[in-house]
Image (cartoon, rainbow, N blue to C red; front, side):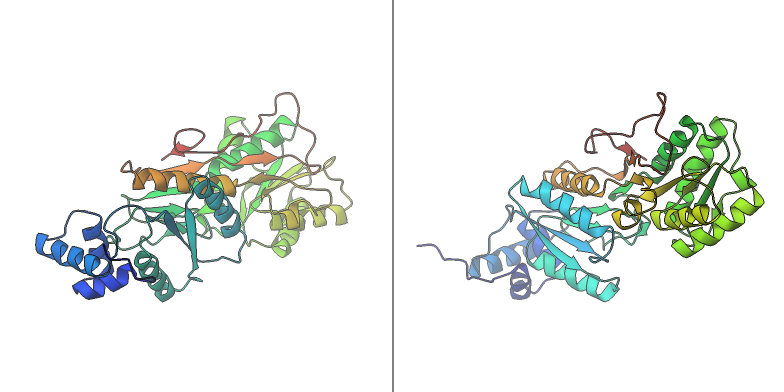
Length: 351
């Protein structure tokens, strides 16, 4: 009779028995390169002694985030769980809370559980520090771009989302359009401003107030910036905001100044954060990041890599425009936002 695997035996136990790192043990068990023959034999012998399976899928992936309680991780997690559930696999979730030591600990812990791959989730669609190159399983970065060129990352198409918002405002007849956004140091703010500026230039228009204004991701800044904008350029007939908090502040100022939304000034936000967008007065037209679809796309990329068909580079998942009462009803030429889930082969653009 063959030996039964002792309950609770992990890859870490095998690594300790063989006297190697977890990464080396995983490579040896999965017949990956860069493992000496003698080392591989030692690991396989340790696995056999502990009744730990060599090779094969554990039907589990690890998802590592830095802000589980935040705005972006939960929708991405839901999308990933839906996609992985259809494959009859499970997700092991770890929240590093922005701490590098906790991140290293959780990577080690997930590898000890013999996960088939990892998804690393960012919190601001900006750069992410790549995991060490000796991590022995495929890794996909979601809502954040790995700083290593050989990795695969799926991020929201912020420039494309801004184009949708600006084209909508032009299509409904607005010509004096301002842009108020967050700190210039955030790549999302710069990309959204770039998309806005490109569309205006294509239509021969200039920003209301003659410049795009960078500030804070807050209602307070939106209120103050709107006062300054409308005082400097009273002809402003639309404001595209870098997020929904800014837009909520702008809408408050517009009303306090006695102007009507959308009749006198249309307001468009970004993120489709229900707390601000649906509860704004009037409800806010905004750009939805499609975060659940982004999470599902990350899973599809990871499964492809696990199957031996990895993708390298950056995929930009399309956003969609959600039209509500804060902008005039779309005219017949108003371009619809993309529909359907983004994926590596449809609805997603690569860098």
